[in-house]
Length: 129
Image (cartoon, rainbow, N blue to C red):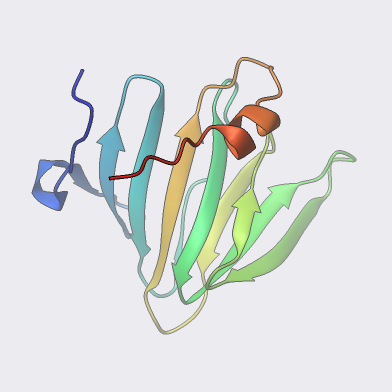
């Protein structure tokens, strides 16, 4: 395994979905990052994830987030540039109900149930170069 790597956009897996979303997938052993462009007046299909932890970072525009709440009702809210969306295990969909392209980054991981917050906060060693 290399100790440093830059993965260029042309090395990603590009998919243009029928729903109007353009995606560049970067898939790794234990995670995935994908860059999404959802076209104006486009809605993705309803779905959920059984094992994947999915988090979105909105980088451009506004995204209508729809989900089914724990009591079974449909709920919605907007996320805009620099907002984070955690979908957990909800049934959800995303819609661009604007006249502009919305862009977001999706981070997908397969969690093992262990709390790694302290490791994440403290795993940095400063090196004098």
